[in-house]
Amino acid sequence: MRLSRFLLGTGLAALSVPAAAQSVAPVTPIREVVPQDEATTTLREAMTRAYNTSPELTGERANLRAIDENVPIARAGGLPSLDSTGGVTENVFDSGSTAGPARQASVGLDLSVPIYSGGSVRNSVRAAETRVEAGRANLRGVETNLFVDVVAAYLDVIRDQAVVRLNLQNVRVLEVNLQATRDRFEVGDLTRTDVAQSEARLALALSQLRAAEAELIASRETYIRVVGAPPGTLASPPPLPDLPDSPQRAVAVALEENPSLDAARSLREASEFDVDVAQASRRPRVAIGVGTDYYSYLGSVGGQAALAGFDNDGISTSAGVQLSLPLFQGGRPAAQVRQAQARESAAIEQVTLAERTIVAQARSAFARYRSALRVIEASRIAVEASRLSLEGVRAENTVGTRTILDILNAEQELLNAQVQYVTAERDAYVAGFTLLAVMGRAEAEDLGLDGGALYDPTANYERVRGRWSDWGSDPDPEPVATSTVDTAAQTPEVAETLDPLLQRPVDSMYPYPAGEAADTPN
Image (cartoon, rainbow, N blue to C red; front, side, top):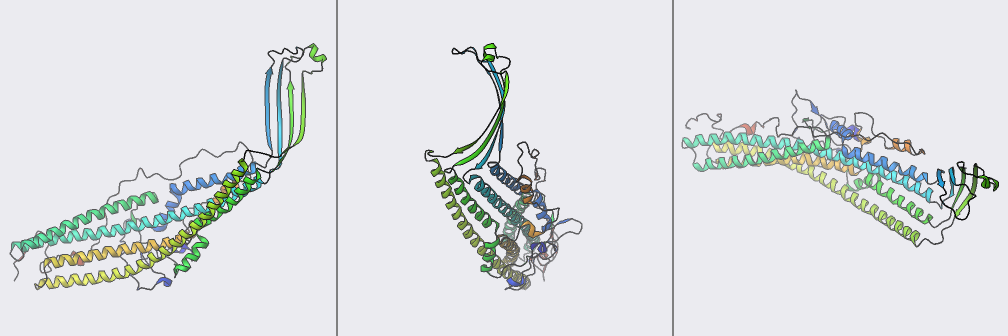
């Protein structure tokens, strides 16, 4: 299944484990709540915007267009060249003769047609074409990395919004709890220690809230940097499709389809042609030359010069074959060959390095994904257990067997479990998408993005490959990516959706709003 299907349904759960990878119970995720009156942004829309406006991606496309030009540059070495010459000469003084013309002007054309260049042109073209293939693979890799960054930024915002909501909810509850504790202290039901414990826990919750808000602002600013626009309200991402059921399968697919490995292999092949180019400098070269010149003595032919056979103007034409056979070049050809061979050796090692990296990335991403699934399940159980624990502690507090501190600790445990839960959801989704990216299945063609036709890296190559004019050029470059200078600074504001359980005050015997007087208990 292609990833385009994955991006079609954007209103689904934040995580849906594929059947092949389901070794744990399905999870009920903490969903992003979307207000009905506010437009939402889906993951597909965020990817499309990044694809069309990312400076990293548009810059890499420009780099590929520059690499495309190496092919006509290499081909030019095997094409005929035509030069024009011209000049004017004034004989100021000649002690040997006074009969010759005093001035001379000439205009000429010289045509040179290379016949044999030792294979340097042919191999240079092959090397350039192979590097174009490597450049296309690099572009695919940049696209993939961009989409991974978009997914990570998108999920970071959703996660941090949930964390801020949880911490904000905790602060609100602790504020009510503190007021309730103070009221009970006034009537003599609690001690000053209970009040101090509530105050300390509220201060700690406030510090956690501020830290969570800072993380949310940072995540939103990162989203703007990657996507090019503020996040707004984000819809839940769709489930991931067809993840491998074993690390061996992930590695096998990655070694076949990963764009970084394709680029390394193409560069290794190009380095082989570079060795042939260097060896060609020791071979003979053959070229055909044809030249024609018009000359004029500018009326300076005197009588004696005319008698000597000088005409005032004329045309001369010459043709010939030029053979160049290098005999000694100071050791430069041998050094160039050794240099090319060393670079070929480096390119071979780069392929091995790329293979190692991809194997490690595939296995690590698979392990992180499967681990995050188990963390999600464990966190879900912890959340449910913490909910029951909090309800039990509150009930026991009503009969005097639990203290205020026990309730505060139970609330903190529930908050920690919920934060761990949403963090695990984010980690699992990002790890799963990263695994698809390492496998080479998270490219623009796989995603089926909307927003117009995809960028075709072959179009520019076909446009410039056969060009031979010396005067062709493209329009002056203009910015393509969008600037984010005018975007507003992000804030930590979130839609408040509180957990009903945590909205209750600590002492369930006194569910009155903060600030109201408490009745004396029976």
